[in-house]
Image (cartoon, rainbow over all chains, first blue to last red; front, side):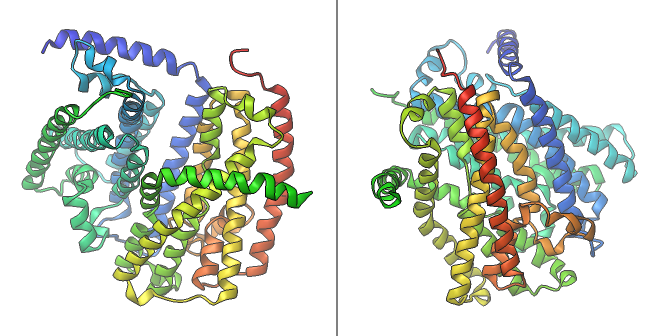
Length: 264
Length: 264
């Protein structure tokens, strides 16, 4: 594993994908407006929920906004890296071009998960951070070093879980060939991440923490920001994230054994 | 002449597209599952007793969201994505030579997909009733008929709107980002995530001037037996279709004049 080589290759990836995406400049502007409207829409929806209630699942409106901001950041990351790359896997497998990826003297998972980049997602990430700083102000959160490290740890764990989920589903393409819509299912489940987990009924809460760990993705980082989180929850998230990462890697290597190119 | 058109063109088209869609039944099943967001929203509403403030009982609200799910299932439109791909790949040129507007082909595709989707939607509804047995109801025949009509009208409105956006492909090549922008108000204002009755007064004052509440809220209210103005809703749906259709024809004729086939 040569880290310098991988960094160099990644720089090339960045360059080529930025160059090809910047061909469609108006697209980026439209995507920015979409991201802003989508954020306004979800805050609007949240405000309907809080219209006549002070609390939803034990969360105040200002606190629920933190979940919204973390969701926006993670959604931006999904749109920048995961979505463009992992939909590409489907194409690679369908057209048999995965052969060329496997022949390259570079790790195949690295190649297919980082090859592309969609710059319009950056704007969404920035929007999310903007809202997050606003939330930190209105919730009067004191920033200190331990808090910052904890929130960084939980956020990066969320990103790992999210990546693994996406990668996991895309890997199943090797058997099913067309899993375009499986990612749609994941997308609609992830939508739940916009709301505090406690606002759902008990059975759904179990479902969303065991089968699809959406609870870990947005709720725990938000709790860290509010200083509500217990240590065991953070530890649990770290464990879940590493388990997910390792299994997704193992699963990819396992799935590759079943890859039999197109038309062969 | 019209009967000849139906017999020689529409029927074969539908038949071909239906057998085409049956090939992708797993995909369509997954797509049907990805539409279950209304049920998650219902869970938030009832679990936090939010519906008390808008005077809708639990049972009526669960029926509303079930109907919203159904209406959404049968009014999903994706014509812009198909058209964009076809126009980028240069497939539109042979379609243009044929003595049939290519949008008929897409229209038949959508209808065939809805027929394929029907059993899956029924299965999901069946599971919904297992979990919520108290919300079972049987709408009377005339209401059922009217709501099928209004769902179809809602589908027509969305199909026309998206076809207009799709025609922008003639100018920009990537029109799907505009569609994603248009999808945001559809998502938040149509009543898919929260019934329009629950919206704050400052939104309710102008929302009925837009087509959005007639896409899901109106047909869902009609089918679920919630209070709604039947003749008013239907006539406004028809009004929107009468408004959008000439616009589509205009943009189509302008666009085809502008069209230059790829690689020529």
